[in-house]
Amino acid sequence: MPSRLFVTYVAIVALVIGPEFVARGQGICFDPAANYATGNGSYSVHAVDLDGDHDADLVVANMDGSSISVLMNNGNGTFGPATDYASATQPLSVCAADLDGDGDQDLAVAKYGSNNVGILMNNGNETFAAVVNYPAAGGP
Ligand SMILES: [Ca+2]
Ligand SMILES: [Ca+2]
Image 1 (tube, helix red, strand yellow):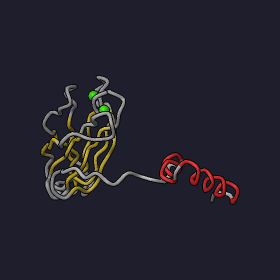
Image 2 (spheres, rainbow, N blue to C red; image 1 turned 120 degrees about the horizontal axis):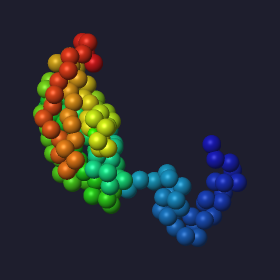
Image 3 (cartoon, rainbow, N blue to C red; image 1 turned 90 degrees about the horizontal axis):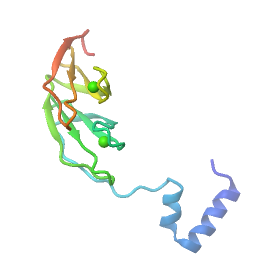
């Protein structure tokens, strides 16, 4: 909870230099949402630097589409079009880690409908190899 003095200070600064500028500086204002197409039934999203350029890219688990969508960051807060990878039935969540120790982030996908975990290895060129599935307990 901001103090009364802080709120007064922000209000005064807003009057002097403009409310939008102050709100952005305080981290309490966002630009309007930008929507990007993904596979069907996007269920969860994970942000991770997939190409090593120090900006966060997006990986989306598409529950209804049985796919993973990867959106690369353009480096300016916008993203390129989604590239979809088949992932088997009902992916719910995805996480990234360097699973083979080559320095790039690979993907692990938990899939509800097929009771397995899918692994997509990073090819190192903004693409991923086809999913390889490993059995897991029901509804990982
Ligand atoms: Ca990146
Ligand atoms: Ca790797």
